[in-house]
Length: 229
Image (cartoon, rainbow, N blue to C red; front, top):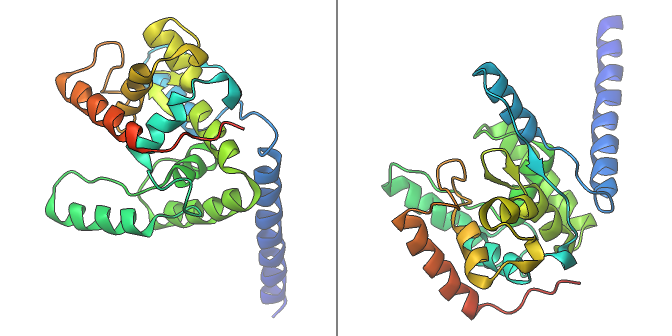
């Protein structure tokens, strides 16, 4: 009985600590730049284990200092209902589920908010635990952040190449320019590599990436401008 009472007390405090710490973290990142992500750490360990040097390229820039085409490009490629949904796109999830039943290559139905939750707070895997935590953080992010803040964090934190994280680093690496100077075509090209940035090279795009880039550009023309402020 004493042990059970102690265990319940420990569990109670553990649950309280989890919810309070995660909520505080989400609120803090509503205002603060995200300096480092779990995936950056994972990539660093992978390089160390293989005996290779990890060259992290990551520079935080505000949304207003990015090309207005960049948010539009990732919305066109990743989540065309981003401005309408509240973190989850049921139709996209259902469509991905139906496609995955027919194909050997799996595709996701995650929204930009879900991807942001995973990138900032979690690790890449397909376990039920990680997906459950992703859903939890997605709700918190949609509750405490604006769409502009979600997009700003997403574009500053997403992996865009080997050691390259965020649109500023990608712009410097691929085009030798700042993120604010990217053209519509260049933004579409960057967005076209996001499904597998370690294989799809922005500097030397394959034919399939170029086809996807053209598709993204067409989709961008159908979408309303993203409100940068």
